[in-house]
Length: 110
Length: 113
Image (tube, rainbow over all chains, first blue to last red; front, side, top):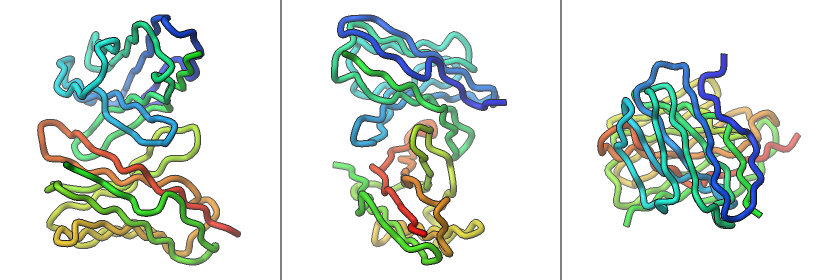
C-alpha cells in the first residue's frame, strides 16, 4: 500500500490555466505538507496543515491555495499558472520527527 | 539569515570506499537534524535522525555525526556500493511549531564500480 500518493504524476499545461494536484496519505498522520522542488533541486516548504488547519504558509503567491477536506487529504490548487511555476511538487505527511514524501507531481507550464 | 549548506553539489567515489557528505548551518539552533535520500524521479526517503544532544548515530553502513559547536553534521556511508548513488539531503528541524523541516540543496553521490 502506498503511504503517500499524489495525482497526477505529470502535468503539462498552458500559461494562465488553473490546475489541481491531489494528495492522500494512509498513515494516520495529523500533519501534511506541500513542498516545491525547483530545477536546481532545492526543496522548499510551501504549506503545512495540521488536522485540516493551516499552520505554515511560507511566502507563496496567493495563486496557490491548499485545501484539506480531511486529515488524510491535502490538495493544491494553482490559479493562473506561470512559467516559473514549473517544478516538482511533493506532498508529505509527518509522524513525530520523520516525514514521508509522495512520489511528486512534475508540473510543466508552457 | 538562516542558511543550510551542503558543501558539495556532487561527489564521486570509488566502490568500497567511505563517502563523507557535509552539512553546515548558520543561525539555527536545531532540535534535531535528519538525512534523506532522493533517487531521480522520486520523493525523499528518511534515513537517519540525530538530536542536538547526540554526537553520533549509526544504522547499518550509515553513520551521522552532529557537532552543534561547529554547526555541522557529517554523513558517512562505509563500503559504498553503486546502489548508494543518489542525492542526499540534510534537513534541520527549526523547533518552531509542528515538525517543519528546512532542507539543504543536497549532494549528488555517484559510486563508481
